[in-house]
Image (cartoon, rainbow, N blue to C red; front, top):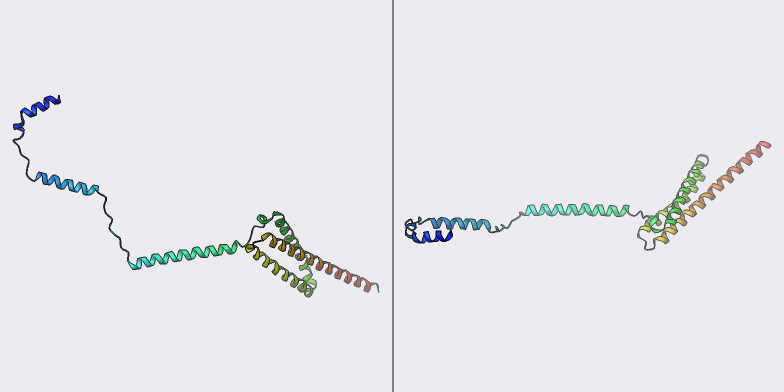
Length: 190
């Protein structure tokens, strides 16, 4: 079929050539092709310029955000001063908890003495305050110490000494109360 079409066109060529296109038609096609090509090409970005005020505001926001982040980091470092004792040595951690709770119960017993003899209580309490200050120093040193287990042992030893001192103080108070009772009983007998 295409052969027949070609033959027909070749025989009637003169009849097809009698019409001529307008002269500006090729110009129109050319401009349309140029516009289509311009759309197809990637557009070049125009260079953006920022005002000095905008740049300064962005820089100030970055400084503020970094300052807040640094403050939060410093704060978290202070709160992370509490070291996980169980991670260092679980046995020592258990001992620390046991001694700390024992000391608290002994302190409660000692506070009962404050009602009867405040001066004696103040003397005993001042001794304990010194030991607790030493314990707190050891606790703060624990976070930065390269040998944490050694510092932890020193903390437990401090707690042991505090327990012993409290036991001695309570023993002195009991002996004192017992001698008071004996004196009162002796005066009653007379």
